[in-house]
Length: 640
Image (cartoon, rainbow, N blue to C red; front, side):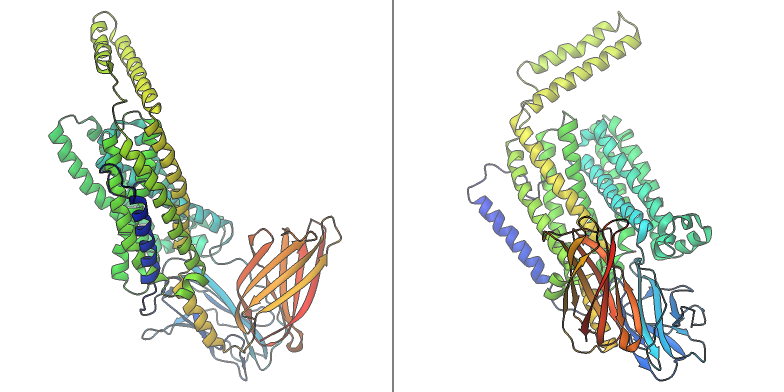
């Protein structure tokens, strides 16, 4: 909530204008500095070249096929496969040889001798240095192109049901980290009385449980996520051992060990610390918990930094501590926001002083987020074209916009914070009445059994808490603050989801490098975007419509494909199945299957669609509108 300084009195009329100007300057600074020039950086590895090149036709069979990448990768026995026109292995099936030298990352596989003429398919899969699986395929021909029967899986590396569950665990892990670290910091820094509040205890413990469970799921699924894509392989001991030997596996194990230390921290915070009454002892224990908890929190944050984007590319030694600071600031702000929301709705005892202290913590967190975010943006994007033309850049723009919305809502929360008082907690005569009630158990203790006395004391405590909560709920300032903080929390959830998506998205700088490398490697012919429109009728109910296709840049090499389907009423139309195939009949190449992914209602897309050579390509589109109604339509387009 309060990404602003603590309240210091009535706000001048010009303060909103100043805040807006400061926000605009901050956004401009982010997008200005991230465009500063620098050497190339990478996160997801990308194929930058090959020998033979994609779509090349060579006179004689090469002895080996080599692939070059933008950064270091981890490979296995089947990381690079070369398939002949009939789909049989043309390579020796040995582990790829590391041919890297200097700054060039290159791997090669040897081919069998005496390979016949025809079109060969090279399929590769590896693990990027930032822990994400990557894969791809291309073709080359010996002598002359030929028809090929190779059918490669349309599932991307890290996709399928295993990929979905793994991604859910990743989101849950970030959420658990935010609640665990942010909730603990809120108790220690802003509201020490919260250590005795059951809702606060539940919030932090649930954060720990969520992070622990998500980490275990990710560790078990790591092998099938980067390999077979089958849930059964989650309990393959050999596969699990291989995962433990990798950087991501080591990071997940380290996180589990640190979570053991975090469990001890939670036990002390909500046990010994909550019961400590001596002020000096409580102060000393606060300092010890703050130091110990800070070390554990930084260690957990480092398990992300050491295995994802920050650990690769330029200035990794700077990027990793910056990433740790960024994650801790996110947790302190968003986790503290969740804690404040729980405190305002579920506990009657939090006072204005605690809210103002969180205002100061939130302001400090935003300053850290701005500084570290600018550095991260510059490192991962680097140009205006990457900012606006890549998925990573577009997500970054969305993230900055959400932060701007969050800051705007926080400004309203700050106004409610300034009006907040504690007078409603103990109205006139309240202290006297409470004192009388508190003496009642002592008077009754001589007349009733100890068990009954304890029961009466608990009942009176509940009644007292209920009265205090009713009084606080009637306070319009407190109600306004609750609504404002709730709005902040809703925006924060979306912001956290976008941030998690960024960690698994190929950075804009790397995507542009890969596109440039692919262009140089394949030497594409000049061409232009291909735009087609094809009506169809499957013969069933609501079976009529139009398929619109965009293929960009419409030349040899890698292309982006977008498909839109409009119904007979001109509105976007969803269908159960959509498939495409490309065939160059003059050279007997294809059909090359393409299975696009649904992006939105009536809109499908596929990236990295390979066109091996220029020519008049036939594009077949299969549309299925029901279980039995299906049609295949085709149209020719000159590509290259």
